[in-house]
Image 1: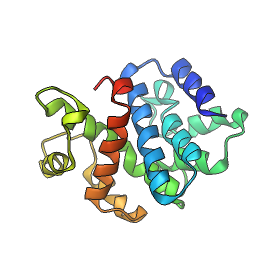
Image 2: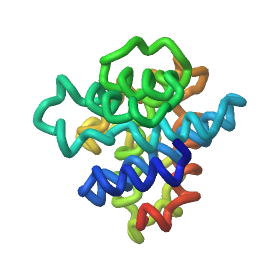
Image 3: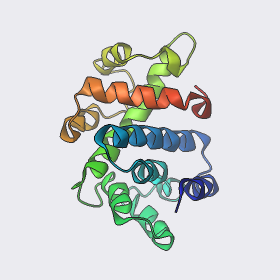
Image 4: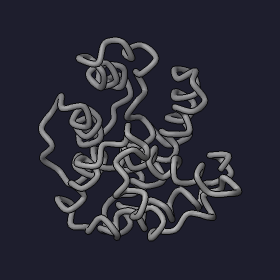
Length: 181
């Protein structure tokens, strides 16, 4: 499966526009992280793009979220590391690779960065910088749904929170048009 096929599948299976944007953001950040670590950008990007493929079907069944995505993807011959990372982001497989750990920490980061953008006067990603995001990160009432402990696990992939935020913001700014931010 290439990126074009994956995106076509996402658009077919995910009716929620904001969820598609989240998946595109996760793809962008995963690719940027792959580049940082000298990993395969295509594989890492596919993990980010496809990680919530089953959400429309499993939003009220969190116990099978990601497992269902893995089942759907069996017919596409994806590399097992991608499928493992997708399952691991919802604790349905061991988080035993850097890709799996990265997807786990990227998942809440994208929503957090979107929340930061929406707090700026122009509501644009271009107005978000790392310092702004780090200040907001300390505010417990801000973007409550973005799990801070999960994001702080970026240290397990070899990044400080500041580096991780910087990479995430940059990646999302590069696709701001697609994200409509």
